[in-house]
Image 1 (tube, rainbow, N blue to C red):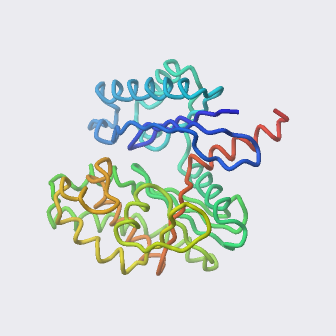
Image 2: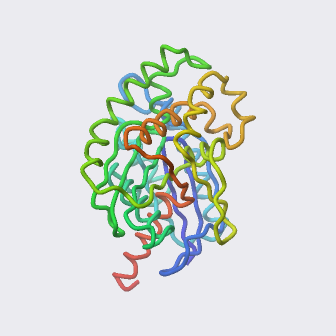
Length: 312
């Protein structure tokens, strides 16, 4: 079956089309994304502005046409933190559902973490032992831990790169005062999560997913020799620390000249780097391996298993 997966995130509206059946690798047949950066369209009352709604509707229309063009027989849809938390989120989602002609599942932060963990477990396999999976999104930061396919611990905190950029980094490049305030906030929000994870046995393998971690690893990580065509990278805390302060001093337009920093991430990479570094420091992680699969792949795997259980 050719399946379309519509992901309305805090940064992008992404359509992934896969040839999906139970037991198959959820490799993309085609994908398309529209950069929205939805956080900038939240007003002082935490409502998506009229302009934001227009941008979302145009992006969803484009995504559905893309899925049709590439032969998707069914489309599943999900939305994450930005719309989940917006005061007019239910109203906006209802309009998008009517436009797309599908149901949109609003994922909780814990569900995001659980799906991402499932994807990482399938990618790394049982041999990876106890996994700790970290993900930096536009609106939130997720962590999940466990030895099975369902994590025994998962949590979400409001430390997304887009959210922090909007809240603290008002200049380009940001001022030292803005960086200092953001660091204090990240440290405070990260502390309860770190305390919870410290009560658990040390993980055997630490994994980072999401575009932010991939960008940082291309910038400051090292390639890992593995079997297969997919590029794999590992990043140490010391490598990341070398770049955290430097990134904040470079204007956004100039950051795109650095390896791994795309135009869609250049404004948020400073905040993303600070979250990644603080997570590694708070959890005493020396290195992290980058996983190419994340929440979308987890959603596909979860959907196919549901179809299998229902005999469809």
